[in-house]
Image (cartoon, rainbow, N blue to C red):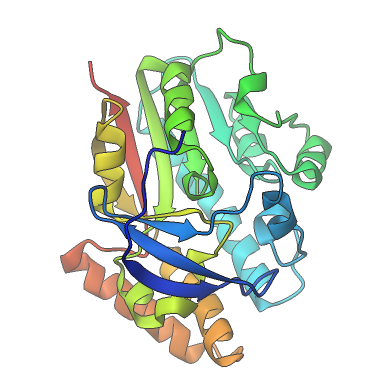
Amino acid sequence: MILLKKSNQIYLSCKDFSVSQERFDLFWNEEKDILITSPIPDISKLPKYYKSENYISHTDGKRNLFERAYQAVKSFMLQHKLKLIENCQPVNKTILDIGAGTGDFLAYLKKKDWQVKGVEPNPSARNLAEQKGITLHQDISELPTDDKFEVITLWHVLEHIPDLENFILQLKSRLTENGVLIIAVPNFKSYDARYYQNFWAAYDVPRHLWHFSQKGIKRLFAAHQFSIQKSKPLWFDAFYVSLLSEKYKSNSSNFIKPLFVGLMSNLKAISSKEYSSLIYFLKKDI
C-alpha cells in the first residue's frame, strides 16, 4: 500500500543520467510536500536501474574524480556518523543500518564495540561487505522477530523504498522504546536543487522514488507517531551533488563552478536552513 498519492501537478521532468537515459516526471503531493517519481517502475524491474558501475554506493571504486571524492568523504563521514550516534547515548550500543552498501560503516562501528546488523538488497554490495567481516541481510524481514535496536540508521536510503508506509511500520517495530531513528535524505528545496533544476543529481530518478522537504519528513513521520528531535546538515553533499549535477548539465568535469554553487548553497542555508541534504533524528511519540 503506497501512502502518498500524486497530484496532477508536474513539478519537474527529469532524466536518468546514470543508467537508462529514460525520462521521468516528478509530481508534487501538496498534503505531504513530497515529490513522487512517475512512473514508479515495477518492483521486479527496479534492480536493473542499479546495474551500473556508476552506481557508486555499491562499489569501493576510485576510478575518477567523483569516485575519489565520494570515497574520501565516506572515510571522513565514518567518524562523523559515530559521533552523531554516540551523542544519542545508547546504553547497549545496538544498531541496525538499512541500505548498508559495502558495509564500511558497520565494520567501523564493530571495531568500536557496537553490536551491528545491517540490511542491503544489492548482492554485489553484500559480497563486498562480507569480505570486511560484515554479514548483511537482504531484507529487514529476515531479521529475528524479537530483534530491536537503540539506533536505526538510513543514510540516503528512504528515498529508494517502494512501500513507504509498510516500511515505516517495520522501522517502528524494530526500534526500542527510547530508540533513535536517524535518516539522511536530500532536500529538494535547497539552493543547489533550485539552481540545477532537472539536472540536480540528487533527484536520481528512478532510483529515488520520493523526494523530501523538511516539512515532508515531519508530516510523513508524524502520521506514524514519530517526532523530529533535531536535524543537522550534511555539508559535503552540496559540493558532491553540484559536481555531479554540473557534469550532467554541461558534460564538463570542471569543478570550479559546481564548487561555487555548493558553497553558495551552504552559505544560503545558514539562514534558510534549506541544506542540500539533512540528517533527521526521530523518536517514537510516547
